[in-house]
Image 1 (spheres, rainbow, N blue to C red):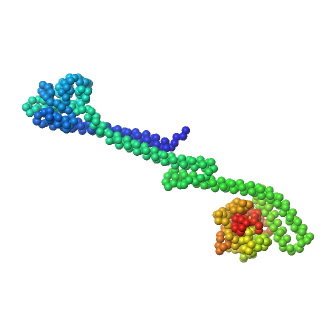
Image 2: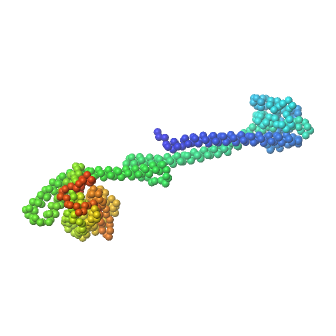
Image 3: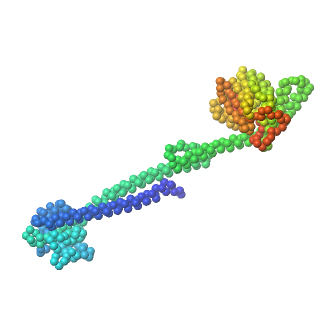
Length: 527
């Protein structure tokens, strides 16, 4: 069973808050109650002192007025202890009541009349002495509790002389019930404030804990969905706290996992494709070898030695066989060292290989290149395949009556190849991923050709890009070259091979009838 973080935050905080508020409120209530009681007793004492120092007669009317002002009951006893005037009923003073609390012992004492009760309390009071109390000196300060006919009173006694000089005793009885009511009235505001404060604090704590728990639960559900293969990304909040940072991290993880899953899927498809290509390459190599032997035999028997069409066919077959060897090497996980050659020879080979396809489709092919004669490139086969792919794509994109131009420019130790065509350009939805593997808009496309062009650029430490300018599509392939270097013997590898990366033999995917950028209607789309 899970213990929600809301409860982990709320319960300890609520218990601590409850104890703090309860202790504070109870303390304030007790102090307020005591203060209220002290005020009432002090008020009664002042009334008694006022009556004790005055010389007007303490008649029943005067006692009733004092009763209305102070809320206490008053009685006057003469020197013989007889009741002279009182605000309490006469039967209350003469009827035997419950026991009273002695001020000296705190034990109950009994009496049958108010005079007897007062006399007994005075006799037990530590203030009593042999000469008796002086006039105006309060005896039994208002803390002595007596009970008369079931009602508890705080009693105070004040001896004094009347206007004729006779000794009388003024008795004040303050109801205990009135004191209790004063205590509650004084204690209620602190308790009410404490209760409201506690309620507001608990509600606020519950809201904060619920909000934090809800945000954490949202992140937990997102992580669970990611674990299930749904790489969702939640909107990021505006709060800059730990939970928001956690949510951003989970979103970043989701994006990375989605990218990694796509990379794994593409890698798996690529691996399967290369395995399939390796098997097909073995069969096609035998067929290409047979076709080349047949053409050579035909030229020896029937053709002329300078027949250009047969020469182009043989060169195409040689190039195809070279690419098939590369596919076989890739399928076996082998690496073939790149072969260097002259840049001028590369341009001648590429032009010769592509020109028949352009003539067949009615595309005008032109070459614009002024390069130093001694310029050497490091990977003849790889660049030949890449440029042929770009030119065949351009030819199909241009369509019948269109134009294709290849340009080469050497600047320093770099050579930039530019393939321009008059076609409409790649589809808008493929512009951002044109060089990605398996990126194609054609159902029958493979999406490999331009990806291999990008791989050639990377393996030769160069780069490839494209743009649209003046109604023309231009692909630029830049690779490093060596100027004024002696030409390497044909077939010699370029040292050091360990400094180069990847496979150096690349197939030519595309023809005049199907190319990597053409969807069959004159638009660019990689297949």
